[in-house]
Image (cartoon, rainbow, N blue to C red):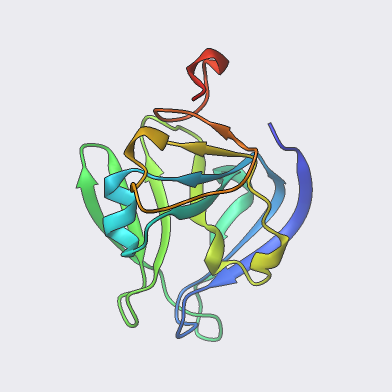
Length: 148
């Protein structure tokens, strides 16, 4: 688990939807699953996980509006800006107490440093990666022996 403590913020393309979080980033990864790829129209998606207790959507007249969400499957919400369409976050009942933010929406995305890949068995065959990060065939790396 990454325990980088900081204050970070992010926003969508039109800046209508904004967020802020205080405290640790609990993990950072690349996801290769088909749902995430299709949601973002991208070959790979970069996420950071943060605890919900330090996270908030910045909603008021000066700062923006709440995002819309799409219930992509049972117990899963995919948040996005209803004005420009930017995907913002993923939240699931099977990951209680946390929200997964798309790293590219961070105010300073260059500060994002992934530490592993998930759903690597779903990686697109034409995507060639040259990193030494752990590659898990399924979801969160609860079992280190699941590495590829």
